[in-house]
Image (cartoon, rainbow, N blue to C red; front, side):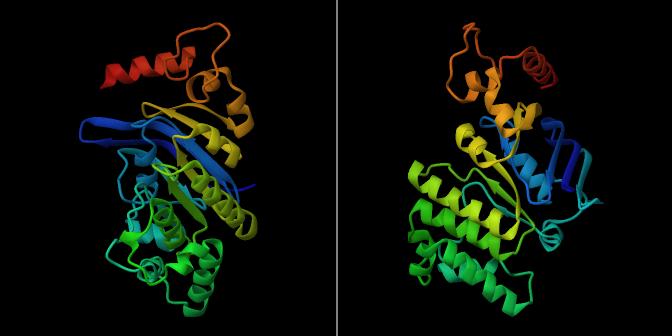
Length: 265
């Protein structure tokens, strides 16, 4: 598989606070990748930087081999990168239909937009039922469907999804992820999924990166990462046989990274 997205030695900060520290991530064509970490690990900052909403202090972001880290958000969307943000960020006073229309604001291919809109409504029938309803009156799960639908109407080649499961019932989350898998299988859309729910993310993705205090501390296939003893202890709720205290991923590598991070801050 060829690389669609390459993040190389990315460093991002807010003033003097460095939130993302020299991380590198690859998403191949048609691949689903997950970025897992606890709250404040730097996951959302990474997605916002890929989306052009934040500017990195150093490093490179390449999409199809071309650098995009200097581009504005709307330019990144035009290239085929769309994001479903944390907290959904729908427009509550607008209808479902109007929110979906916003996903195509940079497109002018009306026939293709109509086809993509219909595909979204087939994926999420609840949106069709609520098409003229104010988005702010819907449930959290329905709003998440709307946020994803809006991103998909942008016809992305790379879909960025930030904390899909946050605040939602497990059954709703499972149903939404099943529909996202349909998108990947039928359209070949690549995805970079940010999740705190490690078990769910590892079941869905083929490749995983674990982010701790702004650094990648573990990566590999989802199966390899799930089988890691430190991963089991820190994120999957499995007690280590040696009963060692769990500090992040409880490995010498992670311990050194945590110490270095604390010193730098």
